[in-house]
Image (tube, rainbow, N blue to C red):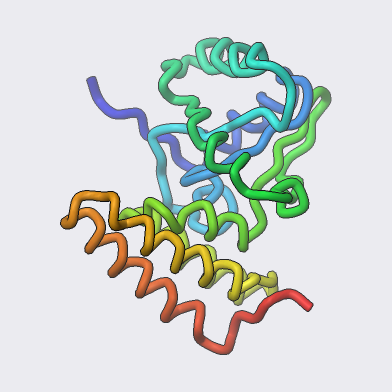
Length: 190
């Protein structure tokens, strides 16, 4: 089976429909945020869309939505919810991305986006992070650099529990993001 490829146009269409038929507040995370907000040629294989509260039944609504849109259930990924909820005060770091008749979809602020990507830090995570930093610079969005740098350091410490070859690659990519963040163009919010 061919992997699913969701580009900016398809993601935009899906979110528009989601806001029309899925009630309540949702948070979009991961590569779909990059594709929609600052990396127009980025594609993804899934949509990290999670409910901003409520019961597990909301996840089932999301799965029903995916099927109704002709997507496999695997195309909607709610695993990112685990990482989002571990971020104390994350709600203050959410920005409205889309509103519709029944629902709203939020995205993470640039700072929260970088924090959430910092632990895994695959090649695509680094590309997304660098694109987010460049976009924030170009649009004047603030990034709390100290917060992101602190998370990158904690992620490096966590790497001791990963296989050495995975940890080394992630640390190198985090180092590259650190270098980019330490440029004087991006500063923490006042």
